[in-house]
Image (cartoon, rainbow, N blue to C red):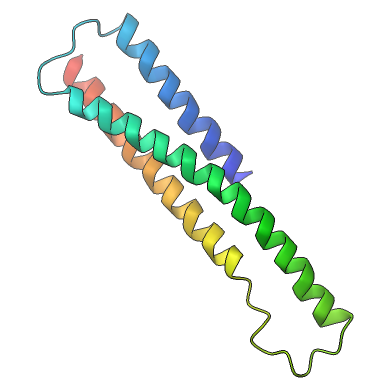
Length: 117
């Protein structure tokens, strides 16, 4: 649900910024276009990272199932250390990077908007 929310928010913010520029700010002030480009790049990065986290989340679930099978079905006395699900750690890191990128994009878009209104 977190990934879907970030994906929806970043995509919406990206689309709204296009509409905002066309209809509300037809003349962009000099020296502020970098803020808009930075916002678009940040939203794009957030979207790409979120899509990557969908994939790592899938692999984390598969690894989690294997860990549970070993733990509850197979004798697990000699298999310590193989129960670490690194894909879960990677997915968590990607989620953090995605939200940070979204927040940075929101900051740049807000700065652009304030400077041009």
